[in-house]
Image (cartoon, rainbow, N blue to C red; front, side, top):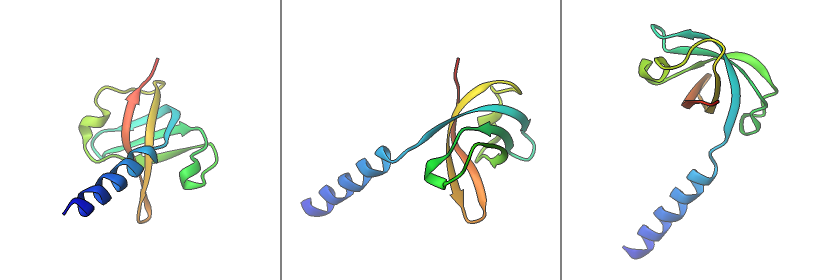
Length: 92
């Protein structure tokens, strides 16, 4: 049991350390369809050059406090053929 717990803690710490925050600027917010267009920097974890593109979000609440022109940091994640902004926060 202790070995299983230690292994789980190891993998959890790896996942937290692997989170890559990317900076970008909001270009469009589509709350109804749970999508946001972000002009972003390079996303190394997805081998993606800087560009503007549409990201899905899990809940519309993630988009309620952001607007076009806001500077943000986000964590991008690919799920099948779709890209998601998994975490999204406004920066100054």
